[in-house]
Image 1 (tube, rainbow, N blue to C red):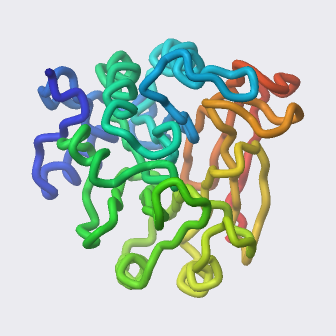
Image 2 (cartoon, one colour):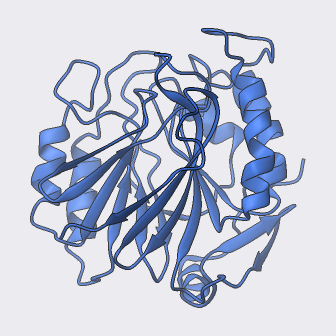
Image 3 (cartoon, helix red, strand yellow):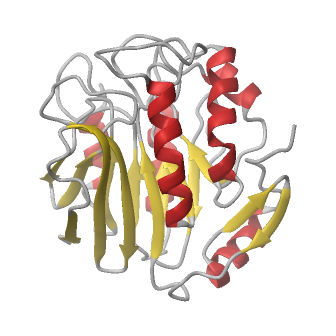
Length: 299
């Protein structure tokens, strides 16, 4: 099978290419580069979360079929021609089965042919099964033992895809000591570009949220270059703020928990001073489908 998700460059080469062209694009295992539409002045990403892809395409929940939903989403993502696609956890339906990831790989193949796909870990993912299915992955690995942490390096911003998977098919999440120590070291670097964190779990104080969320903000608070945290888990499209950091809750592709929430994905355009977010809904509450929200960084 072609390695649609491969990025066969070393770290130094990747950073050089990112500085010149934005990101590397992988088609059938061959690395090429595509010039950013704004010559490094904008980072255009497709943001997906909570796809919940099952081994059985007919699997249904709340009247939604997650397999069919992602199939419907993919053409819009391909047509938008993003520099990259971020899937923010709960890629698999419930327990991260090998068969789930085989279906996910099949569904993502058209978009992976035009843009690299970065997949994070959620509580319904199985890290070992995922890493077997996606053995070659784009981005820079942070090298945190036992965690799948990826860095997207771009002139406009550094995007850090964290790993909050604690137990498979249980609700709560945890970054853990090793990942927090790595993040503290990463943020202490002299690089002043905006940093955007992406994590699956919600940032509240409930038993099903990110359990070390306060420790995360203790790390983030001193670093004004951290501008935003994107998360999923709740299947809600919402915005917030904490300690001067923008908080963006991504909607689910697979299904919503409440009729008032949209089902779909978000098109994003990151710039040095903020981000433009456009909702692309395919189900649920579609009142805001196509609506763009301009966010200026707060600090």
